[in-house]
Image 1 (tube, rainbow, N blue to C red):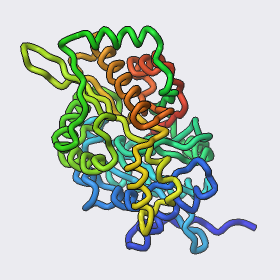
Image 2 (cartoon, rainbow, N blue to C red):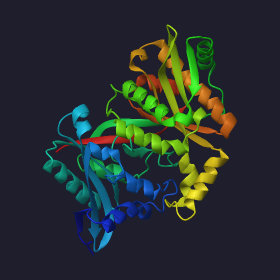
Image 3 (cartoon, helix red, strand yellow):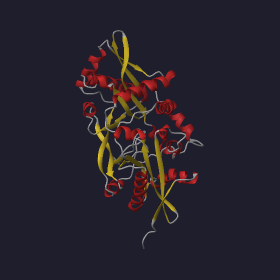
Image 4 (cartoon, rainbow, N blue to C red):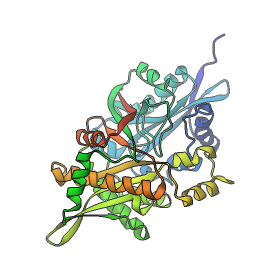
Length: 384
């Protein structure tokens, strides 16, 4: 007996929005490696008056329905900053979840149709909603849970996307390592030499003035990553928003800033941000903070014992990137935070990423500290 046809409609009502959010929890309930995101966070991501991304982006969300039952979802988005930095005519899609390939075909057709109506000539994805959120489709590493702020999807999605005419645009890697182990002797010598250099100093982030520190870090990031593929600068509003979200979950000694002295002036030139793996702390909350989830999460953070931690962001200012000093600063930051997280928080496993597949210097650093690639995310592209 043939299935009922799939009907796709835009998200319009509060009920539609709730169905859009809730669907992922039902479709992934049987996957032991899927970590339920907090529903309040997902709601904030897709709500224009809560997410400053909408100051430069426009999105349409779609639901797929079969025989009166929600069976899939997708987003389509046009971002003014993407058009400025990645080229005219580039629309994007993401946030896909679906029961079967027929559902995906119907949803991607709706997303592409919306992008064409907006004048787009290329479609790229998945992004949820931008490259700073959860970019790429997981194609390698389905056998273990993602760390904080990384996506996870069914392995079946990859052939569905490729069958729809999408080809690889770029791969993103994450690298894992046992942080209880000392780094190789070469790295230790590089770090020791840097520690003897009176022109270099590392400092913790001062959480008492975290807004200023977050703005400083993200200004270094905007400079350091400005020539990377896919780079979209964070706006002032997004920097402030990120600082507000991060403040409750960061620890001053897990974020370090490197400063370089010149003529008596200390200039911030590099940073490394490490986050406790909240996924490990909230996997059993089912995406709900209330009535008891929030209390559980706060208590677990207060205990300050984190078996896992992730480095989502690090950077060295662009003017130093071609110098030997850049890698020395990176190794110093990594070693200082590695030793601190092990000693203070009981951390045993770390993850670095994501890293662009052609970011040779960062991949070389990952290899030098004896990490191994554990997950690959793929961004796809198609002409419309």
